[in-house]
Length: 285
Image (cartoon, rainbow, N blue to C red; front, top):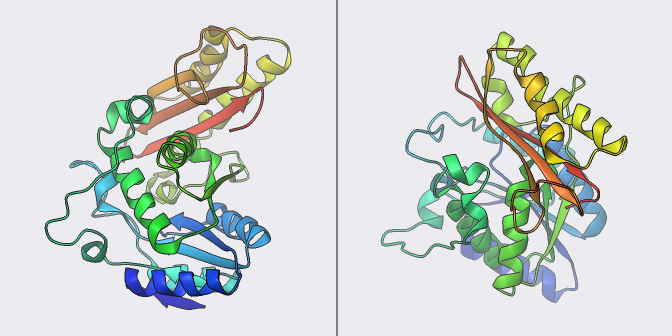
């Protein structure tokens, strides 16, 4: 497994692979790898001949009061785990290499980035779209894979790829969960024991909504209420939003007539950790 830090070196290496006829798959991460990340690596290795995992804690997607400084960075352990699972290349640039002095160019996807997570995290998606467009230009992947847990990110990136004519296929993998249903996340390690116990309410609420949907419910209010009912059982979780939205426009839906995303975000009481989860009703992203 190669570890590359320099963007120019990474780009030249990937262009060489492409010229040789290889297909390149990108797994973008911020490190602190868990089984969810490994599932993405496994999936991309089935699609492409060369697997590239980026490990980069992107400063531009963090707000001024968010956890950039304390975000876990176990780089050596991450590299060892990636290697064990068949990764071909780790791309781990330094922030100053991605955003050199006088850097001034950003990608802003309008409308959909102001909804859901974008309501409480202004600028978050501008940071994500900017860094990922840079990764697409540097790694020149045929495909890039993301987990459904970050559903809004997937929808935003699909919009960017279409609007900016990017020649990369966006793949979406299922949410990987702990045995009790909590969606795997690098931020789960922040949780206190009480918060961790309460956090299963996100999945329980979504599962209750899925059961209602399977029984024929198509009105948004009871589907949303089933999630809220689970969250209300503990004072450890404060909802940021619970919304049923269209999977392209992210417009709120009052009644399902097509595929819809039921998404939830909460903030925990003790560590102020932000957790997200979702389910897609009537189809897939």
